[in-house]
Image (cartoon, rainbow, N blue to C red; front, side, top):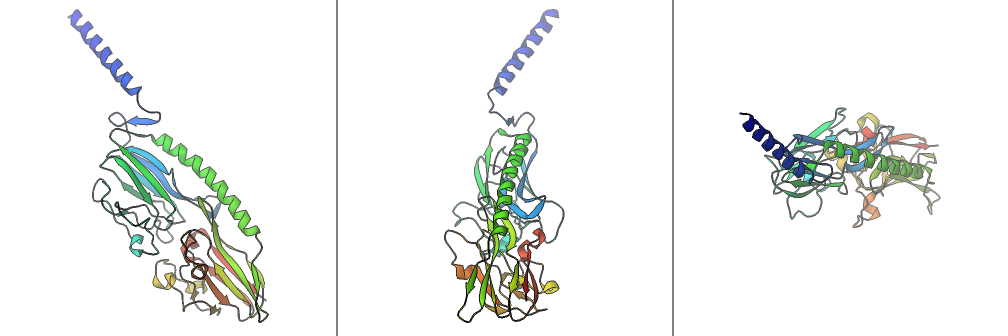
Length: 336
């Protein structure tokens, strides 16, 4: 009996030694899937500056993660800037975008572990004026690298590397996300200071009037600044205000106070009301540029990214970007 016990203890010790040497070969920060891998990992889709919601980070935080097959991956979309988490099958013509495919506003859930052959989409989240954190979850059933994007911000992309048995720990994912967020928020804060400090672009017209340009925010490699600039204080009757979108996100300039719709995908927000540029500002009437598309390397031209209003009389004309109203994107024209 005593010899048997000694043999059992020896075998157990040998087994532990083999297991220990196997674990030592795992990459740093990787979790053995068969051991204590968490059933779910969480990351962020975008981020607004907690001190200034006009600054939005347009990145998945972190941009790249590694998970084992069948691990549930959850994206938290805190807002107020909305985003999508959108996977498309191979062969798709570039990143999907809601301005060309409005169906992407609505969710298309995975029917099982994702293998890369179908569209899977969170839809635009958070919806409306929701204050709770939206979540979107899916798992992966096949090894490989999967690229995804935000349909509202096509330059916002991420990757999920799926393996058979190892993955990033939640600790590593969270640490990387915090470091990236800190860097990108500083980048956005510097861009906002530059935007609001810039002098207004003014063009003198042959009839003696002046056209003032208002920038519809600005963009950096990782952020959007959701601020109209400048605030116009010296506009005269007969002058003109041209809204120009040189940022990487669509925007509207919508007048009418309580008459302005709050649903950004409604036709009277996506399209110009009452019609094409230019239009005359009229108090207590809903006026809208429609979605002015972002500036990209491929276009569109300035004429498609701008819209002009004529100022007929003194007064204060308040306007908003319906798409980014939850982030506080509002402006005013003070005509004397």
